[in-house]
Image (cartoon, rainbow, N blue to C red; front, top):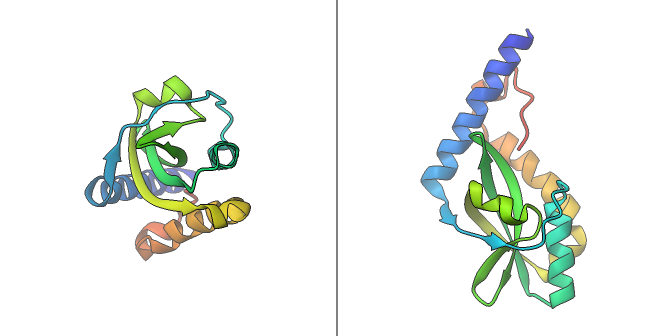
Length: 134
C-alpha cells in the first residue's frame, strides 16, 4: 500500500508541475533576506508591512521537480525572495497571484485554503491513494 501511495504522490507532483509550466508565467526573484525557515508566507507579510507594500506575490517554485507554494515580496518592479535568499536562484519560480494588504492578517488561512484548493482541483484518479500536499 505504501508503494502505491508513493507512486500516486509522484503522479500528482508531475500533474501539478505540468499544469504550472503550461499555465503560469515564470519569474526571476532576487535574493532578499535568507531566513530558510519554511514560513515564506509570514516572512513576506512581515517585510510587506515593514515596507508598507501594497501586496505580496503567491507562486510556486520547484525543488527536485516537486512544486512548492511560495510567497515573494514586490518592491519597485523587483520580485524578492525573503525566505530562501541566495538559494532561490537555483530554482524555477512561477507567479500565481497577488495577495493584497487587506488579506495579510489572514495569510495563514489563505495559504492552507490554497493547498486544499489545489488538492480539490486534482482529477479524482489522482486524489485516490495520494497524500500529497504542496
